[in-house]
Image: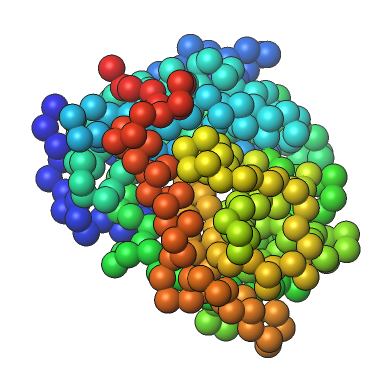
Length: 341
């Protein structure tokens, strides 16, 4: 297949419809066999549960072209597992995990000519999502569901290189103890929209959310996990039942320990410890690692020692190593990289 006539080097991180998307419906207690379809539009009843009670969960992963011309995806089994966990938490019918991986591969294969060429810095973003579709007026779960996968070519999250960002400690709560912070539900992201708009208006790139119970421990931002590097080179990631289990974060922890020989700790991180770290970053599918230069704590700036002007050396090495694994320049652990045949 020939690549689409797209200016790959100038792609933004935004939606561009591709030729095919995958759809499967759940009704009468079972999922249908699913199919690839052409139409990007969805027609639902005005009283569909997704509209009335936000019964929807989603995932995000990417497809890459490697130097030798193959197309690969990264750890889709973890996305399948997390989507199923998210669905169960919202009393939705989980899409079968083995079928999830096959559906992702079908969708990417059907849109191969939208996979950006190797070396462009771009990738094919894959967005699986699940929603309650039947009419529900009383507060209750839906009985019918739609699972879809869309794809869109996207440019690098950072234009002009990875530059440190300025964030603020938020007075808002992202998630409650025993709530839904640990799942990838649309409602969690809706809750973060007002605080992030306010942060942007004040000149900040993101919010640092603290735990809702005591407001003394670091949790995450509206859409990314934190990474901390100690002055003696140890990687520390916050642990909490209300933090989303980021696939990128878990992968980076493995890379740090097994590829770079670093000591790794996954533990609660008191906010009072933040000024002691040498490097701080955010991690997620879109950017892999975004370095943090400064954190505003109600008007008082915490300046990160390594990372004010450019990404610190440890986070830079972590980021480069994971990207090299994703793009098959470094051998990946078994099962991490799936080739689209």
